[in-house]
Length: 268
Image (tube, rainbow, N blue to C red; front, side, top):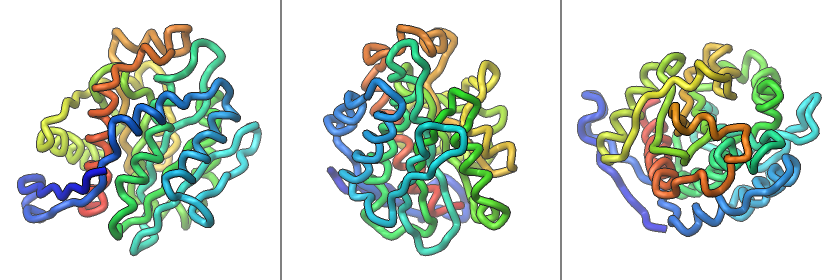
Protein backbone atom coordinates (compact mmCIF):
# COMPACT_ATOMS: atom_id res chain seq x y z
CA UNK A 1 0.00 0.00 0.00
CA UNK A 2 1.14 3.50 -0.71
CA UNK A 3 0.50 6.25 1.84
CA UNK A 4 -0.91 9.36 0.19
CA UNK A 5 -1.62 12.84 1.47
CA UNK A 6 -3.89 14.78 -0.87
CA UNK A 7 -4.19 18.55 -0.50
CA UNK A 8 -7.60 19.67 -1.72
CA UNK A 9 -7.17 23.40 -2.10
CA UNK A 10 -10.38 24.49 -3.74
CA UNK A 11 -13.24 22.40 -2.38
CA UNK A 12 -14.75 24.90 0.05
CA UNK A 13 -13.52 28.37 0.99
CA UNK A 14 -13.48 27.62 4.72
CA UNK A 15 -11.37 24.49 4.31
CA UNK A 16 -9.04 25.63 1.55
CA UNK A 17 -5.96 24.27 3.31
CA UNK A 18 -7.48 20.95 4.31
CA UNK A 19 -5.44 17.85 3.59
CA UNK A 20 -6.54 14.26 3.85
CA UNK A 21 -4.54 11.15 4.52
CA UNK A 22 -5.38 7.59 3.63
CA UNK A 23 -3.82 4.34 2.46
CA UNK A 24 -4.33 2.83 -0.97
CA UNK A 25 -5.05 -0.89 -1.36
CA UNK A 26 -3.46 -2.43 -4.44
CA UNK A 27 -5.39 -3.44 -7.52
CA UNK A 28 -4.37 -7.04 -6.89
CA UNK A 29 -5.88 -7.04 -3.39
CA UNK A 30 -9.10 -5.39 -4.56
CA UNK A 31 -9.44 -7.92 -7.38
CA UNK A 32 -8.71 -10.80 -5.01
CA UNK A 33 -11.55 -9.69 -2.73
CA UNK A 34 -13.88 -9.37 -5.70
CA UNK A 35 -13.05 -12.87 -6.92
CA UNK A 36 -13.75 -14.31 -3.46
CA UNK A 37 -17.49 -14.24 -4.20
CA UNK A 38 -19.50 -17.05 -2.60
CA UNK A 39 -22.60 -18.81 -3.89
CA UNK A 40 -24.96 -18.43 -0.91
CA UNK A 41 -25.98 -15.46 1.20
CA UNK A 42 -24.77 -17.06 4.43
CA UNK A 43 -21.37 -17.87 2.90
CA UNK A 44 -21.09 -14.28 1.69
CA UNK A 45 -21.73 -12.98 5.19
CA UNK A 46 -19.09 -15.36 6.54
CA UNK A 47 -16.61 -14.36 3.83
CA UNK A 48 -17.14 -10.66 4.54
CA UNK A 49 -16.58 -11.33 8.24
CA UNK A 50 -13.28 -13.09 7.54
CA UNK A 51 -12.20 -10.34 5.12
CA UNK A 52 -12.75 -7.74 7.83
CA UNK A 53 -10.67 -9.83 10.22
CA UNK A 54 -7.88 -10.09 7.65
CA UNK A 55 -8.01 -6.29 7.30
CA UNK A 56 -7.47 -5.90 11.05
CA UNK A 57 -11.06 -5.31 12.16
CA UNK A 58 -11.51 -7.80 14.97
CA UNK A 59 -12.43 -8.17 18.63
CA UNK A 60 -14.89 -5.56 19.87
CA UNK A 61 -14.65 -3.73 16.55
CA UNK A 62 -16.31 -6.55 14.60
CA UNK A 63 -19.73 -8.00 15.37
CA UNK A 64 -22.63 -9.79 13.78
CA UNK A 65 -26.03 -8.25 14.39
CA UNK A 66 -28.81 -10.86 14.23
CA UNK A 67 -31.63 -9.52 12.07
CA UNK A 68 -35.26 -10.34 12.78
CA UNK A 69 -36.79 -12.40 9.96
CA UNK A 70 -33.42 -12.88 8.22
CA UNK A 71 -31.27 -16.02 8.13
CA UNK A 72 -28.03 -14.04 7.84
CA UNK A 73 -26.91 -11.28 10.20
CA UNK A 74 -25.66 -7.80 9.46
CA UNK A 75 -21.85 -7.72 9.61
CA UNK A 76 -20.64 -4.55 11.31
CA UNK A 77 -17.05 -3.32 11.53
CA UNK A 78 -16.45 -0.17 13.58
CA UNK A 79 -13.45 2.12 13.24
CA UNK A 80 -13.53 4.26 16.42
CA UNK A 81 -12.97 7.98 16.05
CA UNK A 82 -12.33 10.88 18.39
CA UNK A 83 -16.10 11.44 18.66
CA UNK A 84 -19.19 9.23 18.53
CA UNK A 85 -20.51 11.08 15.48
CA UNK A 86 -21.04 8.31 12.92
CA UNK A 87 -20.35 8.04 9.21
CA UNK A 88 -21.80 4.78 7.95
CA UNK A 89 -20.57 3.01 4.82
CA UNK A 90 -22.96 0.24 3.84
CA UNK A 91 -23.54 -2.40 1.18
CA UNK A 92 -25.84 -5.39 1.06
CA UNK A 93 -24.44 -8.93 1.14
CA UNK A 94 -27.34 -10.88 -0.34
CA UNK A 95 -28.24 -11.69 -3.93
CA UNK A 96 -31.10 -13.25 -5.84
CA UNK A 97 -30.97 -16.84 -7.10
CA UNK A 98 -30.25 -15.90 -10.71
CA UNK A 99 -26.72 -15.28 -11.84
CA UNK A 100 -23.84 -14.93 -9.38
CA UNK A 101 -24.75 -11.54 -7.91
CA UNK A 102 -21.27 -10.15 -8.53
CA UNK A 103 -22.40 -6.69 -9.60
CA UNK A 104 -25.43 -6.74 -7.29
CA UNK A 105 -23.91 -6.61 -4.78
CA UNK A 106 -20.71 -8.48 -4.06
CA UNK A 107 -19.06 -5.53 -5.78
CA UNK A 108 -20.21 -3.26 -2.96
CA UNK A 109 -19.77 -5.42 0.11
CA UNK A 110 -16.37 -6.85 -0.89
CA UNK A 111 -15.03 -3.28 -1.13
CA UNK A 112 -15.87 -2.50 2.52
CA UNK A 113 -12.76 -4.16 4.06
CA UNK A 114 -10.49 -2.28 1.63
CA UNK A 115 -12.12 1.00 2.61
CA UNK A 116 -11.59 0.15 6.27
CA UNK A 117 -7.92 -0.50 5.47
CA UNK A 118 -7.66 2.83 3.68
CA UNK A 119 -8.93 4.79 6.68
CA UNK A 120 -7.60 2.91 9.70
CA UNK A 121 -4.00 4.14 9.64
CA UNK A 122 -4.55 7.62 11.06
CA UNK A 123 -6.85 9.00 13.79
CA UNK A 124 -10.29 9.97 12.52
CA UNK A 125 -12.62 12.61 13.93
CA UNK A 126 -15.75 10.57 13.22
CA UNK A 127 -16.42 6.96 14.09
CA UNK A 128 -16.78 5.01 10.85
CA UNK A 129 -19.13 2.03 10.66
CA UNK A 130 -18.74 -0.39 7.75
CA UNK A 131 -21.87 -2.52 7.47
CA UNK A 132 -22.78 -5.49 5.29
CA UNK A 133 -26.58 -5.58 5.35
CA UNK A 134 -28.65 -8.76 5.06
CA UNK A 135 -31.70 -9.31 2.85
CA UNK A 136 -31.76 -6.08 0.91
CA UNK A 137 -33.36 -8.01 -1.93
CA UNK A 138 -36.22 -9.02 0.41
CA UNK A 139 -37.20 -5.43 1.16
CA UNK A 140 -34.19 -3.70 2.76
CA UNK A 141 -34.61 -5.98 5.76
CA UNK A 142 -31.11 -5.69 7.26
CA UNK A 143 -30.70 -1.93 6.85
CA UNK A 144 -34.20 -1.21 8.16
CA UNK A 145 -33.47 -3.35 11.21
CA UNK A 146 -30.13 -1.59 11.76
CA UNK A 147 -31.81 1.83 11.65
CA UNK A 148 -34.59 0.65 13.96
CA UNK A 149 -32.08 -0.64 16.50
CA UNK A 150 -30.24 2.69 16.54
CA UNK A 151 -33.17 4.29 18.32
CA UNK A 152 -33.57 8.03 18.71
CA UNK A 153 -30.20 8.54 20.41
CA UNK A 154 -28.35 6.53 17.75
CA UNK A 155 -30.07 8.34 14.90
CA UNK A 156 -28.97 11.67 16.35
CA UNK A 157 -25.35 10.51 16.12
CA UNK A 158 -25.65 9.57 12.44
CA UNK A 159 -23.78 12.24 10.51
CA UNK A 160 -23.93 10.62 7.07
CA UNK A 161 -24.60 7.33 5.32
CA UNK A 162 -22.78 6.29 2.14
CA UNK A 163 -24.35 3.32 0.35
CA UNK A 164 -22.51 1.19 -2.21
CA UNK A 165 -24.71 -0.85 -4.52
CA UNK A 166 -23.79 -2.43 -7.85
CA UNK A 167 -20.35 -1.07 -8.69
CA UNK A 168 -18.06 -1.87 -11.58
CA UNK A 169 -20.49 -2.43 -14.45
CA UNK A 170 -19.51 1.02 -15.79
CA UNK A 171 -17.73 4.15 -14.50
CA UNK A 172 -18.91 5.45 -11.13
CA UNK A 173 -22.37 6.96 -10.82
CA UNK A 174 -24.46 8.36 -7.99
CA UNK A 175 -28.09 9.22 -7.41
CA UNK A 176 -29.02 12.88 -7.10
CA UNK A 177 -32.81 12.70 -6.58
CA UNK A 178 -32.64 11.80 -2.88
CA UNK A 179 -28.98 12.57 -2.17
CA UNK A 180 -27.93 15.04 0.49
CA UNK A 181 -26.77 18.13 -1.40
CA UNK A 182 -23.48 18.58 0.45
CA UNK A 183 -22.58 14.89 0.20
CA UNK A 184 -23.22 15.05 -3.56
CA UNK A 185 -21.25 18.26 -4.03
CA UNK A 186 -18.25 16.91 -2.13
CA UNK A 187 -18.27 13.71 -4.20
CA UNK A 188 -18.34 15.67 -7.46
CA UNK A 189 -15.51 17.92 -6.33
CA UNK A 190 -13.36 15.00 -5.13
CA UNK A 191 -13.86 13.26 -8.48
CA UNK A 192 -12.87 16.45 -10.31
CA UNK A 193 -9.78 16.93 -8.14
CA UNK A 194 -8.63 13.34 -8.65
CA UNK A 195 -9.68 13.37 -12.31
CA UNK A 196 -11.78 10.25 -11.81
CA UNK A 197 -15.01 9.63 -13.77
CA UNK A 198 -18.32 10.37 -12.06
CA UNK A 199 -21.79 11.12 -13.35
CA UNK A 200 -25.39 11.25 -12.14
CA UNK A 201 -27.82 8.41 -12.86
CA UNK A 202 -30.97 8.20 -10.74
CA UNK A 203 -31.29 4.43 -10.48
CA UNK A 204 -33.68 4.96 -7.58
CA UNK A 205 -36.41 5.36 -10.17
CA UNK A 206 -36.23 1.66 -11.01
CA UNK A 207 -35.69 0.18 -7.53
CA UNK A 208 -35.03 0.91 -3.87
CA UNK A 209 -31.71 0.34 -2.16
CA UNK A 210 -30.44 0.34 1.43
CA UNK A 211 -29.86 4.07 1.10
CA UNK A 212 -33.63 4.50 1.40
CA UNK A 213 -33.62 3.07 4.92
CA UNK A 214 -31.49 6.03 6.02
CA UNK A 215 -33.07 8.68 3.79
CA UNK A 216 -36.49 7.72 5.13
CA UNK A 217 -35.22 8.77 8.58
CA UNK A 218 -33.83 12.11 7.31
CA UNK A 219 -30.20 10.97 7.61
CA UNK A 220 -27.93 12.66 5.05
CA UNK A 221 -27.27 9.90 2.54
CA UNK A 222 -25.75 9.23 -0.85
CA UNK A 223 -26.03 6.11 -3.02
CA UNK A 224 -23.00 5.28 -5.21
CA UNK A 225 -23.42 2.76 -8.02
CA UNK A 226 -22.49 2.11 -11.67
CA UNK A 227 -25.83 1.51 -13.36
CA UNK A 228 -26.91 2.85 -16.73
CA UNK A 229 -29.73 2.01 -19.11
CA UNK A 230 -27.34 -0.49 -20.70
CA UNK A 231 -26.08 -2.16 -17.50
CA UNK A 232 -29.22 -2.16 -15.34
CA UNK A 233 -30.72 -5.15 -17.24
CA UNK A 234 -27.78 -7.28 -16.01
CA UNK A 235 -29.16 -7.29 -12.47
CA UNK A 236 -31.20 -10.26 -11.25
CA UNK A 237 -30.32 -12.29 -14.35
CA UNK A 238 -27.81 -14.93 -15.35
CA UNK A 239 -25.66 -12.14 -16.79
CA UNK A 240 -24.72 -10.88 -13.31
CA UNK A 241 -21.41 -12.70 -13.06
CA UNK A 242 -17.73 -11.83 -12.89
CA UNK A 243 -17.40 -10.93 -16.58
CA UNK A 244 -19.99 -8.17 -16.07
CA UNK A 245 -17.40 -6.24 -14.04
CA UNK A 246 -15.13 -3.74 -15.78
CA UNK A 247 -12.27 -3.92 -13.34
CA UNK A 248 -10.62 -0.62 -14.23
CA UNK A 249 -13.95 1.13 -13.59
CA UNK A 250 -14.34 -0.80 -10.34
CA UNK A 251 -10.89 0.18 -9.10
CA UNK A 252 -11.57 3.81 -10.04
CA UNK A 253 -14.68 3.62 -7.85
CA UNK A 254 -12.56 2.40 -4.95
CA UNK A 255 -10.00 5.19 -5.46
CA UNK A 256 -12.76 7.79 -5.47
CA UNK A 257 -14.63 6.44 -2.45
CA UNK A 258 -11.55 6.05 -0.21
CA UNK A 259 -10.61 9.72 -0.76
CA UNK A 260 -14.24 10.81 -0.40
CA UNK A 261 -14.62 9.14 3.00
CA UNK A 262 -11.35 10.59 4.27
CA UNK A 263 -12.45 14.07 3.22
CA UNK A 264 -15.93 13.70 4.70
CA UNK A 265 -14.22 13.05 8.03
CA UNK A 266 -12.77 16.56 7.77
CA UNK A 267 -15.79 18.54 6.61
CA UNK A 268 -18.92 16.93 8.06
